[in-house]
Image (cartoon, rainbow, N blue to C red; front, side, top):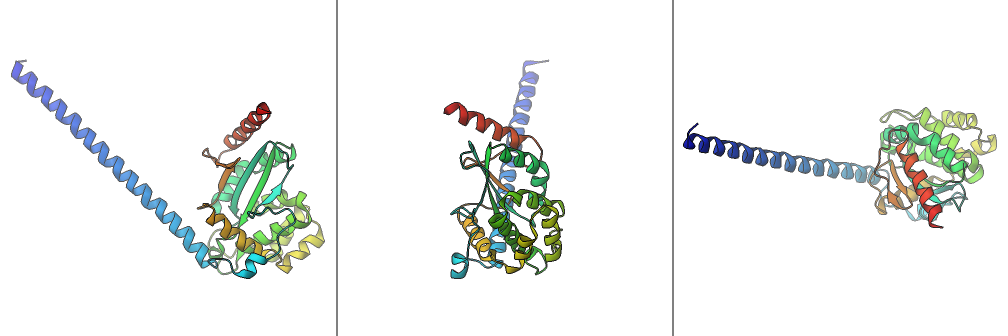
Length: 256
């Protein structure tokens, strides 16, 4: 091959390489732009749902009674106060992704709470009321869980698991009050506590806690935090969360 031919061949290769770089850069920018648009839509949808569910809480919602084990920021505190790891879980009982999270992690989290390894701060939100054909399922479910937390806290996780095991389809009518009560009794909740669901005692608390969660930066469910930091691992496969919690517990004990 002549010198001139080799030069042309080299120039062609360099031109192709440069074109490939430009193409990859354009694809990357498009992907980033698309991701931002999707993220923006998700946030917008969440905000719209919160606003549709009532917007800012009314004075009555702010002053509504809270469950006995509720924290100041709207969580139900389960497990030992001196557990080495604090796990925050924000969920809505109509949210299908929360159902997937529960299926993958619920049993293992419950075991860690029982063992004293994890203190669970459960945030039952009620922002998907508009996805239950006007029956306000998210609020009714959150109120039921809060009622159990107030009067029979040892049954909260079993009842929560049952609600997800029979989770209604998003966009449907949700579970009836009778079905919620039936699941609660099946989870071992005492009859007098189940009867109290109808009093709607903690609906205002659920609305206020939901608004507080979104005001604090929560943008969707499930949101999971370990010792105040967002968990970045796989939420929908058994194992990663448990491993992270176990590692955090080991680190906390080692620091003592």
